[in-house]
Amino acid sequence: MTAATLPAEIASRWRELATEAGARQRAGDPAGALALTEQAWQVLPEPHAQWGESSMTAQGGIQFARAADDIDQAWTWLNRAKEVYTSESGTFLVACWEGELRWHFRTEDAVPYLRDLLRVYGTRAFRTLPEEALAAARSDSRA
Figure: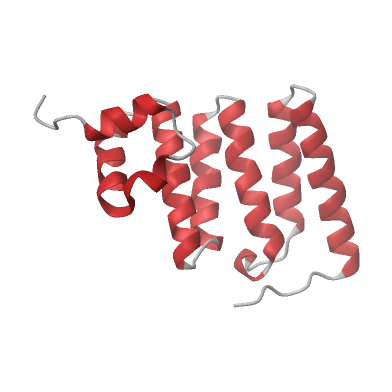
């Protein structure tokens, strides 16, 4: 499915916010980047899945929430990503991001989730995770 084109005014505002969010992240202000990313999301008309900008915004939100160590925002952005990444490759990306977040925040179910990720997608799902995450996924579940 091809994403719809945003009206010029909205696209311009979204670009401003997304650009500033990236600048804040590079300046070491992930919380500021996260706040601007939320504004960028709110600029996009519903339903969000129709805009390509939504997927970029959701991905940024996940990255910035993780950098800000904000688990609640990380889950909010992951759920938004699930709404807008609906293709098979998108589902794979979201599953990988979920694994990254579960590992980063050391959730109780991180290792079982990573085991499932390994079973379903293989080692390609671990490209952005540390080696120890893959080792944990390969560990004996009865240990």
